[in-house]
Image 1 (cartoon, helix red, strand yellow):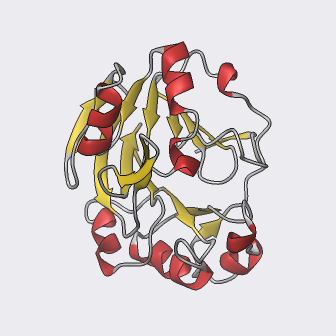
Image 2 (image 1 turned 135 degrees about the vertical axis):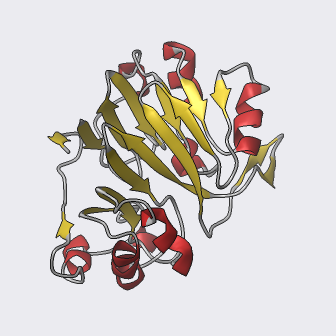
Length: 227
């Protein structure tokens, strides 16, 4: 399994012969060098919520690749009405795919997007628990800390957890370090920081807060590593 962090909360996973993109925020992302046009072979696009810095280039990529958009029910219906292929489990629901399973996890955050020039909520913000090749990957999405995160690891610890540390809109470093403990993360990658002035953070300070036995990892942007 190959994993790539493209900056902000944009994650690429290559697993079981499939390419998955999570929250493909490209235009306006100051870190990544990739373009939406690069992703013509994408199989699935997974979305945590409707904010523009997470939906990003979903429509362009899905149009070019025929990818299935996986998102919580209401957001999936929004894209289905536009003619895209979608899968829409709701919170707590798990759906099987040819690469593994996706479970929709609660997240404490908002989820509005512009519709006909008006900001309207489209569903609710979520996290995602992805199981593939025997591994559990937890995508926290944009969220504050909440104690039920511990339920993510009810059956197995998270092999990899992507946790926001930017504060202001999400958890800060201290809360994210506690979240890593709750999900029993073996490896933790901080995301959603330094993209905008309001979420300026030092990721090393976050890594220093992790407990012994937890591996913090700061990947190079756009560079693959093996999980």
